[in-house]
Amino acid sequence: MSGAPLNLTKGPDETFILNLGPQHPATHGVLRIKLTMDGEYVVRAEPVPGYIHRMHEKMGENRTWNQYLPNPSRVDYLSAMAYSHAHVAVAERAAGLEVPPRAEYIRVIVCELNRVSSHLVWLGAFLLDLGGFTPLLYAFDDREMILDLLEGITGSRLTYCYHRFGGVCNDVDDTFVRGTKAFVEHMRPRMKLYRDLVTDNIILRKRLTDIGHISADTCRRYGATGPVIRGSGVPYDVRRNEPYSAYPEFDFDIPVFPEGDCMARYLVRMEEIVQSLRIVEQAIGRLPDGPHIAPKVPKIMKVPPGDYFFATEAARGRFAIRAVSDGKEIPYRIKLRAPSFSNLSLFEEASQGMMLPDALALLGSLDLVIPDIDR
Image (cartoon, rainbow, N blue to C red; front, top):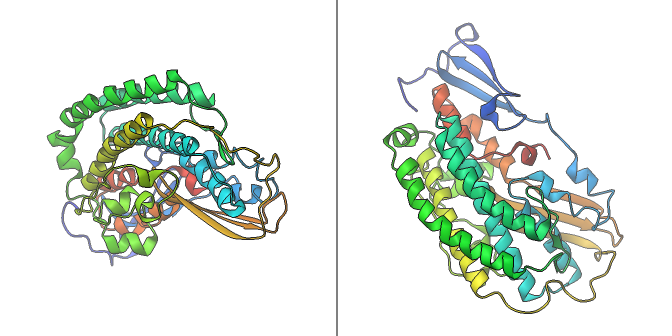
């Protein structure tokens, strides 16, 4: 918090209501936040979600397992690969379906490329919130290389339906392998450019350091995960804490910064780009031969009766699917655990007493995707 301490006990006659959204650029989508203000200070920030609710969970109850394949990537369109991965993996776990090693490596590669792409969008949008335009152009220029690579094997550039039960729908070719290696070689020097242009910029440091503190206890109470909790000193990452796919075979670090401020969350994501490049380089260099999808996968997936759960590490944190099956082609119940909802939930408490511009910096540092909240 910057400025003089705020008296949060002032009466209603001394405050006013300010609507942030639902179409304000700083809300990154159709989100409304009802602000109770005392001058420039936030007395209360009440998120009002629901403007873009699309009933993805209800759709899971009236579509077959196969028909639901396109849905998860529409929940968080910037981290679509990790969401699709969770959907196929929960069915594979339930059905006892073994995925070929090549398919698992390909899944890791596309998920990590998608993570870098998501963080680049966040970087450009976050700095745009703070008044800086130039980094957005660099970030989207680098992101285009990833989109070109993923388009070549998936046919899409944003919402992907690439994962299949037992593997992936298309194998990667030499063009993808060469392009991925070239992107890693291109991106590593670019991280120095971002450090010189943005990270070490004194204006950004003054704007984010000691602003928007979130304690580890607050993260735990609200269920915040991903870069938010890692920026508060907790080394929780599903890829390490609940290992899945081929991630245990790769060497990478979990970036953690204990300060808990906006700058810490910024640094976590920038370092995660570096670690994702490490994973991609290892996976593409050791890509095993073999099929890209398991043989004899049933054309119509049926899952044995039971209650199943699977979690992945998406760009914004822990995404999980709980699927209840009664043995039919259509799931009995689908429940999605979306990280953006938990990360937004702490904003009301964390922003109390902050100046409005600092509260916007805090909001941007959470990296919210509104369809992820209004699923």
